[in-house]
Length: 240
Image (tube, rainbow, N blue to C red; front, side):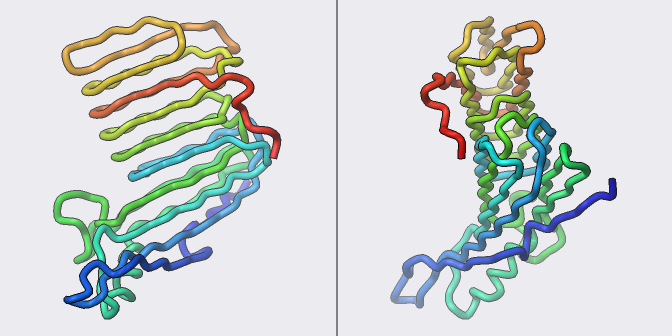
């Protein structure tokens, strides 16, 4: 099947200004750009999230589609005369969607490193990122996150999630069976499910092996925490 590349950026944009910060030196406001993309997608497929950073919230639902909301903002406040250029600044971070097939989707983030706006202390272009993603509930997730927080809930498929710095939180249904392998090199790790814990001087590891057809959960964090929580059946949402 021919690849269908769908650009999340420039689909729709909303700029929201906050209240002034320093009235005596001129109004300075936060520039925020929001983009929403909906992609048809079959339940049970694989969704890859590559090179994301900032805050990621992935939630399962019962629709045969993926909805991606990306909210971006420069990590500074700007006076009125600079707001147009600041709005362009967020375009240095691009999020694209590549639907390889009805059951294989990639969501990728790329940062321009050759702009005068680029943050001098890191590769993130001075742009704060938030991702709000809805996926079919039984999707397989493969998340390769850079820095920041990842929260996954209401998903009952296999999950692979890795991060460099930050926290990963998975909320899993207690009615399902899992084979879990989780490790934080530097940081804490907690899990509501029975299994084997190994705590080192600065890191922790947890494992639980359950035969197929148990869902495979694989989590790795460089510096930060991992939390795997159980959600009772009555806490699962109704069909949308």
